[in-house]
Figure 1 (cartoon, rainbow, N blue to C red):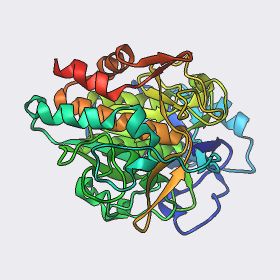
Figure 2 (cartoon, one colour; figure 1 turned 180 degrees about the vertical axis):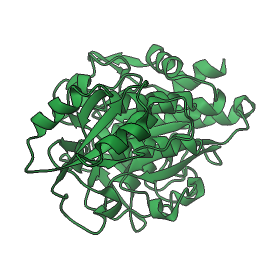
Figure 3 (cartoon, rainbow, N blue to C red; figure 1 turned 180 degrees about the horizontal axis):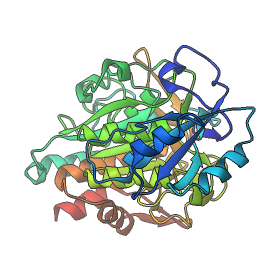
Length: 405
């Protein structure tokens, strides 16, 4: 499952839970020049434009995100003319459309696969083919044997999605709440991703994850998509800021859609902000069997982008390629069994499913070295990956082993 962007609609995500359709406004994200006094510019232009300021509210002032304003425009207006007018304004550095996102239909699954697992008491672990292919048992044993190698600091993975059912039977022990608003998930996409990243292992319930029992790695949720599956670039960026400001070490984004990398400076600034706050951002490559370089935020600088493989360790037919992505990797994303709302479980497929698995691995890596940067983490994962069918497939056991030597 992934998200597609429709750049000529606007949605107010704070109200999206009460409506099925996007509003009919268009919004622009406008970055003002560093030399521009923002309040003066807003005052001088508020009669001409419907301006939202401040648009973003990061705690750390050392970012260009606080130089952005939003401009709401009626959908009957000439958008190209307005953009040209703004781009010629002496106080403006950059203009882009606030892209609107909505959930795609889930990718088709095949038959339920049952695999044999030797040492896990999680009753449905046998439905998770990645457990055997990625050697979950060996990984858990390694971590238990070298528990002293883990840092005492609690590591938090933030799932930015449709929300997460925080009281799910197989998540609640590993779940931390930022806000009750984020802890419900009618759609199910966020809860499914959360289980892949951090389902409770060894509790005689449901499924297993890369995290061993009693792990110091936890998950949380920042809801950036409505219950109807709608969201916006602005809301995703706000979610990245919120997760960063609240101390997340890993931020997982199972969302994205076609977009030019030249028009993604706002995403780039958000990723920089997260990195400067100590977080690593990981996102899905897309489900169009195309080049992920033409998808955002997969094409954003500084982000780790994940494509999906099937149980035969081949690229899933729907998955976008990451050959031209700076930090591109592959992980299981076809026929993935995970948590679902109302204490249920389901199979789903998509690069959305591959991404949180890598987020879980990044959480373990951060628990060993909290100061790990995106570049360092990527190099560790790539150098220890399984090189097969032209892809670098993450190998959690080899990666963690290398860090614990």
